[in-house]
Length: 293
Image 1: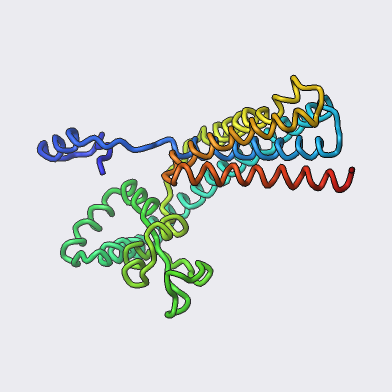
Image 2: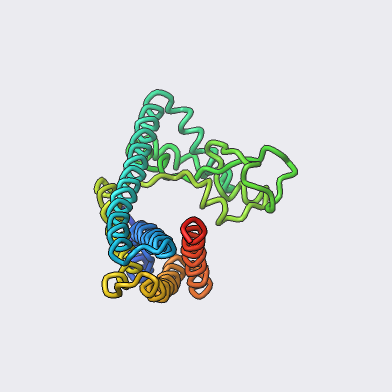
């Protein structure tokens, strides 16, 4: 994988190879995640609310008023949730950074031994990883970066663990490299990295605010889709039919896009997303009809 080598000393031949090899990676994962969260809830919750009120024989004006209020409240709530989540991530990184800084100063030999252990698990011999450990000890910032970004793994609480068992049978083991656990316990790498990869990247200081705004705006955009028919059709019973058609079409398009950008099967994602929205609205409509015939 090609990475940025700015400020890194490489021989000219390797630098030329890296310059020639440009990989195109999708780097907007966090933004897409926030958009998915916002649009998904924005399409589903107001849709279910509008269907429920329509089932209770409310007028289009009441449905629209309640829907707009819900979109506003939902956007604020979801945006605040995104802000707090990103802020917690930044706080966690700061705590771990301070801890590693203190350990490098207070117990440098122990930290160096941990680096050696990690490299040894990759099959690197002591005479090979020794210079690497020594070089890191001479560069505290590089050493700190390595400790913050390394991949820690896990061990099993039961020797009978198999890939089909719940991840509840696992516990984290500090400084165990991922590949070592995969090799010895046959754990799928995607499962390991999605749950047990504790390598930390320095968060963007603007991330919390960006996440809040992205989720809130996405929620608003998604939330107004099921309400559009109620703006033009006075009868809620007629508007709900148009709302169902419009929202299901939007859910299908959104689900397809979500599957495409997240690497899942787009058509399957589209059907799943539309099905969830349909079930939510049908449940709300049915309950409202039962309570208020």
